[in-house]
Every structure is written in C-alpha cells, then in structure tokens.
Image (cartoon, rainbow over all chains, first blue to last red; front, side, top):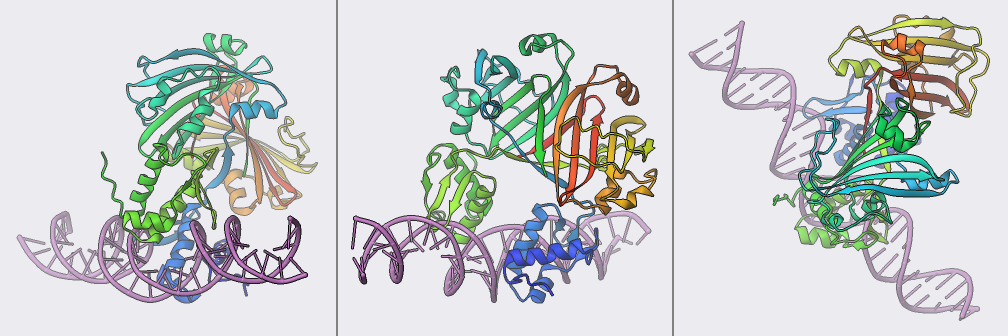
Length: 233
Length: 233
DNA sequence: AAAGATAATATGCATGCACATATTAACGTG
DNA sequence: CACGTTAATATGTGCATGCATATTATCTTT
C-alpha cells in the first residue's frame, strides 16, 4: 500500500503517476473520470482536477471535455533550457565581456522573421546590430528588432553602454516567448564580423517575446564557430 | 482597447500582466495581496489566486507566504524544450517516416563523445548507425551507443523494424540526461548520407541519458539541411 | 538588550456547490 | 440513409468558506 497522502493534490498526483508508470493504466487508455477518482480517494473533485491538470501540463495525460482523460501514448520528453544572458555566459567562462553597437536604425527595416515565427513587430521598430565579445574575440552577432509600440522608451535609448538584451530584461518583461535554433553557413558579411571563414557552420538562435498579445522584441543571434548549447533533462 | 473579462482568471491574468508591463507595479515591488485584488476585480480570492499562480509559474512574479507577491526582478530565462521522437516529428509534417539501419556493431567501437559529456559508456556497447527518412528524403543521421551493461536486452535486438530510439523510450527509462546542440559542416561522409553538398551547415543534437549512475545510451543526431528546433518559454 | 515565545498576516490548499462549455451519443426526420 | 437537432456527459471554471503553513512583526522573559 502506498504511503502517499492521498488527501493532498500532490499526493493524488503521485498516486496517479505511479499507476501510469506501473502500467495499471496503459498508454492510450482512458482513466476513470474525476468524480470517480474523487470518490475513490475520498476527496473533492476539485482536488482530483488539480492533480490531473498538473499531469496534463507536464504532458503525461491528455484531457478533453466530454472525451475524458487518457494516458499519453508517447509522453513527450521535455528538457529545461536555461537561456543565458550573454554577458553572464561569457563571464562564466572566465573571460571579459564587451559589446559594440554596429548599427542602430529607427526607420522601418523589414523584420527578418524568415517565416520562422508567425508574428510581425509592426512598422515602428528599432533595429539593432550588436557584436558581443569574449576577451576581444567575437562571441556572438546579434540582430534585434524592438517593437516601439510595446516599448516606446526604447526609442530614446542608445544601447551603447548597456546591451539591449539586459535593458529589455529589466524594463520590458515578457509573458511568453518562442525560440528557434538552427545551423547556418557563414555569409561573407557574418564571416567578416565573427572573424571566421565564409561557409563555416554557425549556431543560431532566434527568439521572439510577447507581453500578452503584443510582441516585444525579436532577436537573431549567430554564435562564433564552436559554440555549443547545453541542457539537462 | 480590449475589454478583458475581469471575471475569468485569464482575464485577470491579462490585467495583472498589463500592470506589470506598464510599470504600474515596478520590478521588485510588492503587488496588492490576493484579498485586495479580489475585492477590486469583484471576484473570489480563488480566482485571483489562479491568475497569480499562473504568473508565478511562468516566473513573472515571485510569491512567498506572508511575504506577499512581488514582480520578478529577472524574468524567466528558462524554456521548456520538447524533444520529439523523430517519427512523430516527421509524421507531423505530413510525411511518411522510414528508417534504415546502416550499421550495427557489437565490438567496442570507441564512443565518439568528443569530450562533450563527461562520461564513458564502457567497453560493452552496441554501436548503431541509422538514417531517418521523411518521404524518401534523408531527415536525420543517427549514431548511437547503447551500454549493454545497463540494457542487456539490446544485445539481441536487431533494431531493424522499430528504431532504437522508440524501443529505448518504451523499454529503458532514464532518470536524467544531458543535451548538447551545435552546428557543424557536413563532412564528405555525412554529406553523402544526407544527400547534400559537403560543407553545408547542419544542426546537430547530442544526448546522453542515465539511469541513476549508469549511462544508458549516447546519441548523436545530425539533421538534414534546413532543420530547426523550436521551443516555447 | 538578546533570545525566545506568540500573534498577525499573506499565500496555499481543500471542500461543496453551481454553472459553462465542448464533445460525443442518441434520436428523429426528411 | 444521410442530415441536423437534442440530450447526456466529462471537464473547465467561478464562488464562498475554512483551515494550514510559512514568514514576519511584536511582545515577553531573563
């Protein structure tokens, strides 16, 4: 018998987890509905609901109205990725961080969204080109658009002393974001900027962030050769 | 102006979000407590709680008992990455998945860990080279080592019908793993395998998984040109 | 004044209930 | 039989309330 406290929603979640792991409820099969589980555990349906909602959030079960709750067939493998602030990342390597603003434009430069994200930052944007250094060596090349409708204060900022990234982190919080990673061959321009030979495979990260329904900023980072991104499961 | 329905917890969340973004509540500052907000919005405290919990989960506010709720100083730098099973990923594109085993060896081939991960799979391993297809086009090239000490059943498996990945997912659960992403130029061999020109920038993912202290498997995936990995914050 | 006990407070959680909503099943009707 | 309509049902959400728990402030006691 399990010693889990079945009166707390976490306890119920553990018990449900156990049943899924022990294949008492097989992948793809339907599990009893909330009311039955509540009766079995001797708790309110709300409590079971909380536990099931949590499991659904982690992707272990699929819930649909009327259709009931099913054990996910292939539980998605999730990893948590920590997106570092470049300065911190460089300093963690024991190197000195520097950055230089290559370009700053307010005229509407068409955002280079490449169709990666389904969003537009609108017409009124700041466009920034920044190069990040680690010990005088180029570390990453950044292209950024900032939506001035969402962050009007950015119009006056020069972003020469503090980088746009850090300023935005502290001044324009976002509620959600999307990330996209890819590999690309260094163009002549980026090769020159990052001090490598054209054609070198480079790791690239694109990110777009929103506050509610309003896009805040779009960044495309191209890292110098050899960059690796790590994550733990 | 959007007339947010302040009677639903999502509506309240939007309004709270707006206040954070508009700096009505500055980063680091305390926001009114649940009871006050409930009264202001004319709803139950439970509903405000739901909204605040959601914001706390996304990392935008920090909540502590008695201490109250504060706007986060450093908004989230975490993203959850869902690592797809290649077959599902391909099928989600509306394409037909296929894979073919290029090589299978049991003799101790030195694992190509490249010093990325600090681990060794030991001497007794299966080495697999698999090519994954999407509609007859190469999709990803996989090199894998399986630790036979941890998964002895793998010695007898041929991995011709079901891919090693899916077999392991369902038969060798792991407790933790490490991931590493990088970009690399296609070698002559990988270019031939993936049907692209040598030198093309390719996205690569390496993963090692453990059960407890025992490494289970190490995979290196090299994706065909144009691959992108997505993630949400 | 320092240390410990105690009270106050904000969030966390559980309950019982009601109603909303999405989805499926059953049922007619042409 | 194919179709639209209606009913049944499981989850989703809101509310009022009470108690639990962590943390801080305050009040003792020595």
